[in-house]
Length: 323
Image (cartoon, rainbow, N blue to C red; front, side, top):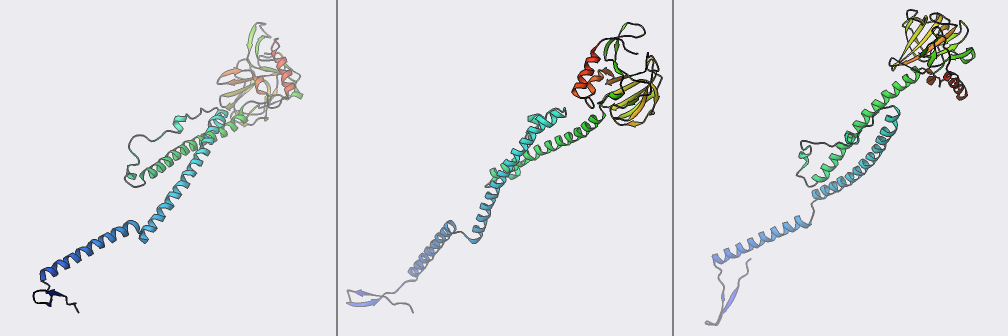
């Protein structure tokens, strides 16, 4: 029930009831409604500004968790970069040098990504700079890992070739020390036994009795086993690959045929004196890319330092060759 209000009328000396007009009532109603609306808006603003909703709290926790994970990821990427840098250094300064491969230039390893903006789709967010930086670092790290992976693939191939090279390269004497009578003539200028003129002797002569075993000095394939080469008589040529060919001349008998694959130490023939020869001996040559080189540099496989020193002394003495 609405309250009734009165006022004192001094003219009549009595209380009179206050009659409210519709207009006044409307004004009061409007003022109340407006005040309520303003208060509601103010309350809503304060609520949104200072009081977090459950959804906002969840989103805030997720954002904080993402920032934490980003920092951990950033540290992991830094550690990965450090490890990769160490591998790159060893790759350039140890592996590639050992296997005679050119080091990979630094600018090739650490090249960035030019041209079109690759990260445009990541722009426009509150944490765009953080996301773009992380994505860029991952891209650079991924590229460096790819370059390093290709380098290690190359090193692996070089290792396999190196193993083949070490097995193929001439590395032992073609005649065992105990079977040698003497080392008759070394590589270099020598007196021709027939013309007595100075002539370049392109191999080494090993004096040994007829029938002494001759061994392949490295893995390879027999490309000749015949007597159709002037002066060499019965001779064998082995292609070792990698540019190396060895020649064994003045044999009395073959133990291999053309096309046969041999390994270092295999018996391939026997000492004789066929062709242009004064006495039973083996004329032995090593050729690299078609050019004769001194065979004495290839006996590291079965000579002690003292034996090598003695052979070097004998081979350096000028005299007369046997062929």
